[in-house]
Image (cartoon, rainbow, N blue to C red; front, side, top):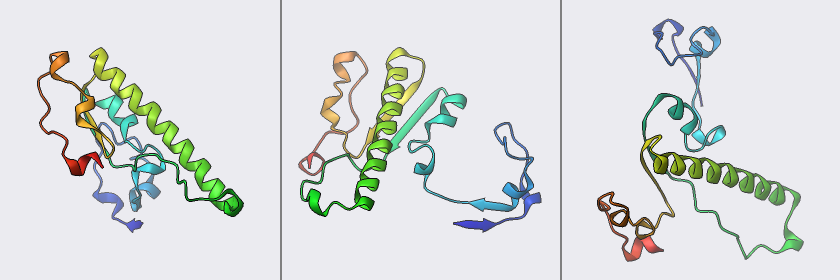
Length: 139
């Protein structure tokens, strides 16, 4: 979505690296974060020591109802893009978890497919989870 805004309404800050571009101050483009960085981690990693990530991306799965004979070029292209997107998400998530474990960063990660009991915090001396899985969250 494109919004036209007053370019003089912006104020310079320590993270406004595009402030000098009048086109970008005048035309505000709003889009889903998945266009570039699905989890929004790149900028946060440079600026923050504590990061909370809520990953609302759908869990990656194979649609077994699709028949290859009817699998069009468009469907194959979409599938390829989905695989590439999932690979990037997995790499960024693993790197974030590595940063948490190493103590480089602090914070939390949770996603739609997260099974709370897969993260035994008490065994690691990290306290206890704020929530527990229920029959609904296990589906």
